[in-house]
Image 1 (cartoon, rainbow, N blue to C red):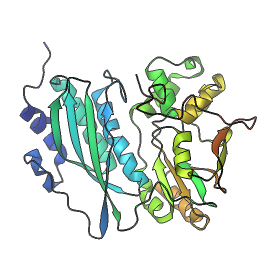
Image 2 (image 1 turned 45 degrees about the vertical axis):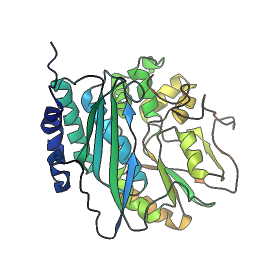
Image 3 (image 1 turned 135 degrees about the horizontal axis):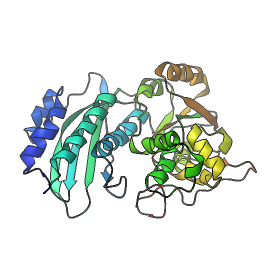
Image 4 (image 1 turned 180 degrees about the vertical axis):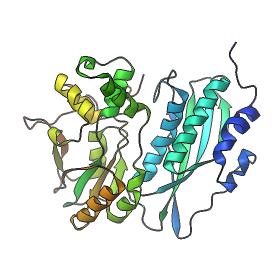
Length: 338
């Protein structure tokens, strides 16, 4: 018989309340609300990005990985705004009372993630649902007053950069769900790397100060490179050769084995890298700041006058994704697991 949690108080006080240490305003999760005091001369930045079983993760995934991802995708949004993560609210809706071992591993994953990202649990709620497991995080960060980095603000002449590597998560999902026909081209280490990038994304928190100082606009890549790049560039045009994209060695080997994966790389989503535009006079400082922070950058190009934004192949034609990137209301698109 499964060793399930017997009541809500046990779930909250045994597994979640310890995650509030360091935040007096969480009141040990014994109150109906939390008290978050913004830093002096700072603005509060808030984001909410839930994850749901069979949409954003597999129900069979390790609980610690699910927890990590739940927090990471929200912290990534904060990082793209130049915000330092501070606290988060967690709402859990279970189809049934969770097993104690499951909840213990989930709490360990949250503890590892919040320690890595620099934020603390402030409160939330737990519920039963007739649907699948749903995990909703609302994350709070802070920026110096007036230094929030918007999504829209790029101008002609701005240089466009992306952090890290692109496409790993989408390929990792294909491997994780046994839908990859490129397995033979990869070593076990390659496969572990790509699946790991899907299960445990790394928000670029180290870059927030440099983004605030230098970027005119920024967002994280959650719905696919092409879709999010077009969001960043708006009415202005950018033509990016596929060969100029930053691909990890495993991803490059996968694409070399199956060239059709190029469309997956540019549309798959769940990269959680940062796309940003930087005015030309700030580029040197941006490169220097990123190097100091240890964050890899790739320059994708310079924004031109109004035009189209595309990733293009060797023949110069646009690599059009099978869909326009992930969309919750278009189940044919993106990297949903179901």
